[in-house]
Image 1: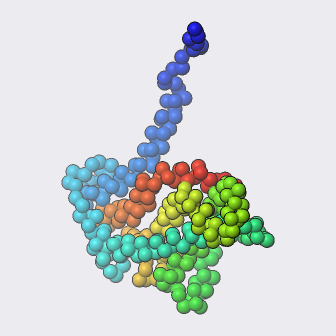
Image 2 (image 1 turned 60 degrees about the vertical axis):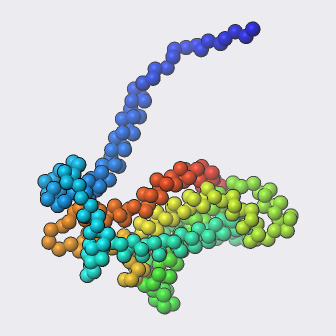
Image 3 (image 1 turned 180 degrees about the vertical axis):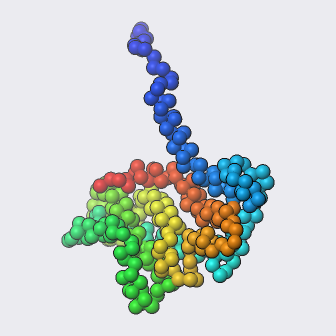
Length: 295
């Protein structure tokens, strides 16, 4: 009969000074980041008469969604007063093709650089990554000249191409590092079975790329949706994204500034990235852990 092993030593205390310090830090950090969001939401739900009292943190005594309605459909974004809804749909039109094309090209580049060891691949990869560390402002004027010469400047195609170009370094890095962690035997077996470049990519590699596809989608959706400088420079007046129109709403007010409308418009502009993070944040962490920092 086996004797029961009794635990030795003093039982650890449930609450230590270190643990209390960690909790205090986490609560302080959460309040630090959530307080601005709380103020924005509360301000957007108050009428201007209540905002003038200065109690920006207090709950609204008279809750109203009028500011949200005005921000969406009737706030002035310059000479026009159609609200931020026009910019929202412009951002959607810019976002969808930009995200799809940048991820597709980045995945193909990462696949080619990981498994097809072409001559000079490392040099090409280094040059590509170099573009990620050069400030975007350096490229603005040359790109304006190039797109003006080709005749697509200030168009939807122009802004989509710009987002695809500037998304390539990050997308290529993510997929290359992820594919570098996959077993090379899968690629060799597909080659033995007669698979070519596209067959292996579409039937073997791409079905295994779900975690990194989710990570890439989150990064690109957030970056492209929040972009301001490219949209202002390359989209044209008819395709101005939501961020540009948000800036116009905040800075085109005459007379008394409608802080509740400004806050409501800001929340509407941030809604898509917030929804993406809340819905797919778990997948983002899994994708990063699955290989985004490998290689």
